[in-house]
Length: 122
Image 1 (cartoon, rainbow, N blue to C red):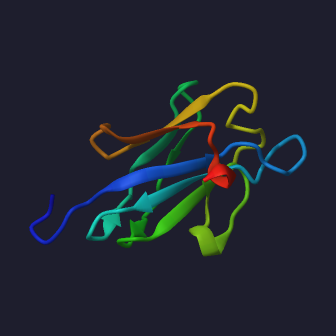
Image 2: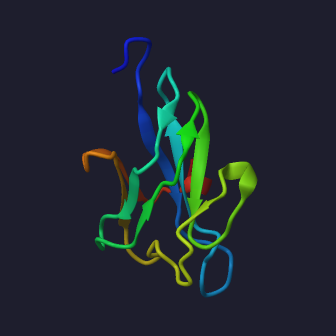
């Protein structure tokens, strides 16, 4: 906790069944800063924790209080933060539940999410 507010970053949902054929490049994980202050995500890791890989390291990223960002499998959408694993293959399994974890720069798990439900089910 900072002197002026609370940092609370969480995985909101996983859009695990992309519509792009085969690669499902449009899959994403949506992350929310539910805290009262901006969160510096630089160096944080988003991980497919069920498989242990792949992982995505956040570049210099400040997530304002109340804002969301998406990390896509292989697409870049600037209006959602412009972040991508740049994976040529689907990451999130469609046939079995999977789990994503968000780790801070100390390697501590800050948030996890499984599916279903996915983003469209919320």
